Length: 184
Image 1 (tube, rainbow, N blue to C red):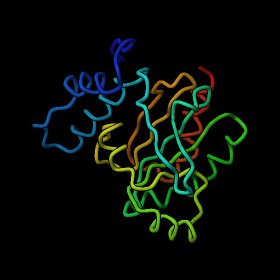
Image 2 (image 1 turned 180 degrees about the horizontal axis):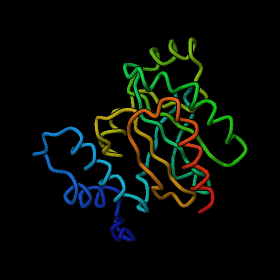
Image 3 (image 1 turned 135 degrees about the vertical axis):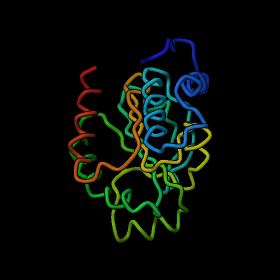
Image 4 (image 1 turned 30 degrees about the horizontal axis):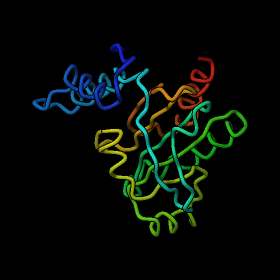
């Protein structure tokens, strides 16, 4: 279900969707996860929040400047083993869509030093933003689940939000999502 979001900011729509679907009283993890999925689906079509930051290598990043491209945002942390294990599949995804106006950006909760150390062992072909906890929790208001993926369409609107590891299905499922976004 998508609410009318023509004049809604991401934050306003997030609050409406949360009131509709998420109860703090839920004690069953599977019901809570389902409510988060419903809330995330409710955000489809709303303009993505504004993000201005710097990448691991110091490059200025402004998500608004990438309108016209599809953005694949990956929120994660080094302590999340499924997140780290997904890096080779995510690299395949970035390589596969390199010539298709799809940009891949990761938002990691870790420091520049920790990420640099990890990337020496396991290269990651996404533009990476270190120390991005505030972007994750305050700007996108994402749940504590990691990894979290946000796909933004060419018009700067949320196409899809999803959480959790896809394991061996990472490339196949995300490639399907990106192709679907490219067709719209």
